[in-house]
Picture 1 (cartoon, helix red, strand yellow):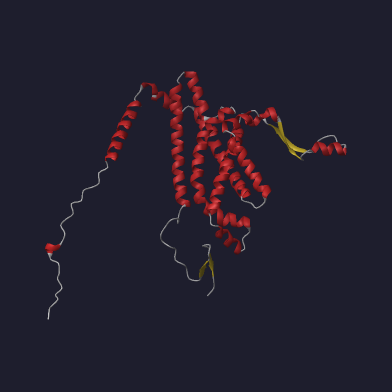
Picture 2 (cartoon, helix red, strand yellow):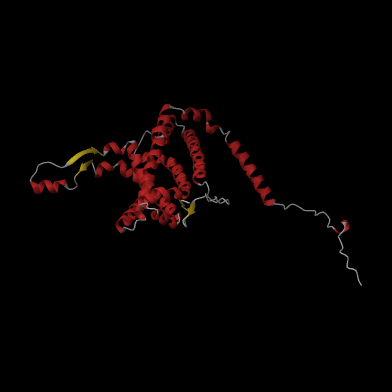
Length: 325
């Protein structure tokens, strides 16, 4: 009889220590060296006397420049973005409507204002008085009705001259807001279409109207997709306020700095001053965009599943309906 004894590997049978050699990345080293050299060259460039840093900082804090920063840059940016977001969401809902008239109207608006450069649109609004010297609110084609009835007069409630729009902040908000609405309509439409259709169906099954389901269920979920490009559009809008010179609007940051440069013959330092202001404001907007994205992106992409509470029944669309035991 043969005995079969289980053999246990001894210490001599263990493999030796692995002499691991780290993977070398020569390309990274070359890139770091190149970046370091370019950074050193840039820092050295900042010492060029042509910058005239004392004049730059002095121009940045002039009272007309601060007024232009607040009234022409910040106010127009906020007003145009509010107008663009509200009108853009309305246009996106119209575009997705089963009503063909609403859908085609929204598409025509988007096509028209996306095709016109913002500088040209602002220039047209600045010269709007040539086409429409006065805008009046009342019954459309009132002169036809008054002629038929033999009445002398019109049926207009009030009106205003368009010259007050051309060179004011209102014209800047109107021009940039209409242009922004065309882009926000596409952004909002993409966000709405990113939400699963089952969410809308489940909301309607719970008795919500189509409008209420859009406000309470679809749009809050679409914000995760809408917020990042909206933040980019806000930053772009802030920079596009420099185009308000097409109105022309003198209460604007770049206009005031350029005026200082023209009077003092210091063109380059005032351009640097404008660059620093735009860098500061865009950096603040980027920080705000980061927190907004984190706020609306909560719970997305996490591996942990929420535990169902007792007495709740999950629906197919992810909504939870509370039931009685």
